[in-house]
Image (cartoon, rainbow, N blue to C red; front, top):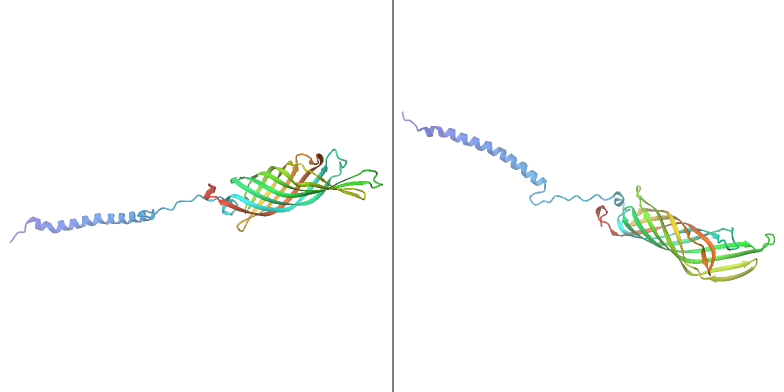
Length: 267
């Protein structure tokens, strides 16, 4: 009987062992490679970039209420004007009220999300009627002066902005300067005798305060403004103090924004 060498008898067992070992190593490496490939794809490797997270926009900006740095607006509305005669006039105690119209051009700069500065040019006019009896009431000796004057008011205002819901509310306070346009026209009458006079008006200063509001509409905002204003001194014409003046006005209008803010309100 012919004997085979030992290595020939062990060859099938060796081949079987090598195949089994290869399969044991190949299976985990293949699974790991697939998992790693999926991870690289998911995390943006192999050339794909991860998306950058943008800062969340403030709620007011999302509603279009606080998207720009600079706003221009135009308002108009009625103004109640109260006139109290100066102490050194014969009209003392005879207060009067008239209704006028204000036309305002405004410019607003948003320094912070809650603070803005506003300046305006307001065209307005005064129409005061002061009177007094120069004799007995029974004699009806009534002395009357009707005043008419046009002027520009230049307010400088600090506004504090809040955004409840879909609105903007802005309490504010400031000062103003009054620049006359032309002279003060006066119609003087004593009973049936009338006379027309003109006086040079002196510039004056005053203070104001109120509440502004806004609502997004179209490309801009509908705005409203309720304010009280009063002169710091007496209204003077021709070197004479005539009356002290205060005003309550309600104006509405529209404003547009410029210079859009970046996301998160950053410059």
